[in-house]
Length: 451
Image 1 (cartoon, one colour):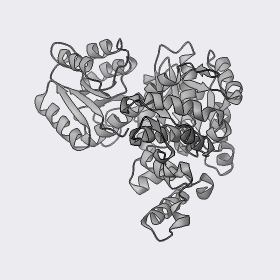
Image 2 (cartoon, rainbow, N blue to C red):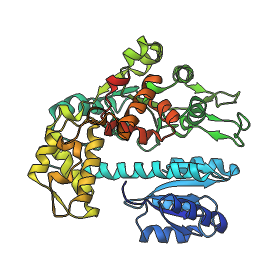
Image 3 (cartoon, rainbow, N blue to C red):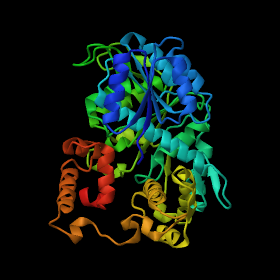
């Protein structure tokens, strides 16, 4: 998102509320406060917030009651609940009611800021999906997708329709930005599990110790900093669907524990001694070639055959160019808040001629940029990113001595060092994984260069 995020902090503890407002404001967000649940609901109905940080225990109306009322709003903000350790069961209930995440007090501002940004991204994705469901001549709206591509309709949508009502494990394959999470959500929403939770976790964004704690939960005292018990995402997905996003980046030790959990239907929290059983449908996605990863010893063969019951391959946008104009026009409409625009013929031709290495995600950001920068009612080629117009080449080719070229080479060397594992590379570079992804796209770093 290019504009500041609108955030509401609802907490009756004045000092804590004002601290969070001040610190999130320093990080570029537009932040308001509410001292109780009633005031929070009034503000939410008056203002379009991206994210609400909601305390569970407040006067007049408890946080859980606020969350229930938000469920009836047509465009409710994403909610992050804050709670004391004794309120963890309430926080779990909040997750089942649709909260994005929960944090236990005391909360680190840095952690809260990261979760706020991720929650806002999810909210934007859901709004974009709503826009894509609008009917267009010759298009097939389905589970968040809008496509004219016969290949998409035959090889993706048809398989979703067939597999969704079952409990079979689904493996979604495709390049970054093609919409793998959209496919996973479509499978969930068209299944009997739709009323229950859909819980995604990115397998490469966290170190192994943190990842296993997030996935399976942990007991009090399991490790330094585990001052309370925390259920994992597997438990939160009970009765629903768990998406293991970019499963190809999962550490080998975690792969062993995941396989055991899939085969037995039970798992242990980190530091726990009592097995726990849940009913979860597993969907996995990856942009990696798992067959090659198996040969390299980076992915377990038994886990691969266990998750590859039904495979769905999403074609890249460059192989379904008939969808570029359709999607671009809908993204223009989705960004109407920046001003009503239309896509000029020359700009559309440039979009359709571009290869889109970042796929639909890159198209979305390119259109949003064009809508914002366009001075008139019609988007012109000059409003598009330079790479779309073919007016620039990767820094390494055009200016080998520039700072950009040096950064590109540093990123490439780091990716090669960790075998293409973007989560590890982001950690070594001390940047957010999404920032690293944007730089990979911006510098036109192809996967073949670091594998």
